[in-house]
Length: 116
Image (tube, rainbow, N blue to C red):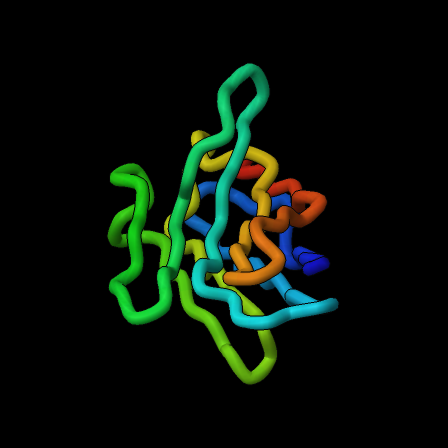
């Protein structure tokens, strides 16, 4: 089984930046997908950004040019650098990963609040 632990959420003013981190641990074979989803109150969970091994990053249109996803395979860690944050980015952000043997895993979520 794969465990994911997120960190880096918090309260930030509009226009500010945050960097989320997600560390994977446990019985990892190979993580072919790592990414971030978010869920705002009353809304469905949506994909924010993901990295598929050997491919280019995918981003939801609303964050293109502002968010950057990256990963450090040596540390089994994925990052989400969020710049120019807007109030509509407020949500719980969830880390997601897929191991080619163990399957999908989710983190517990980290709150991001953008407010003045």
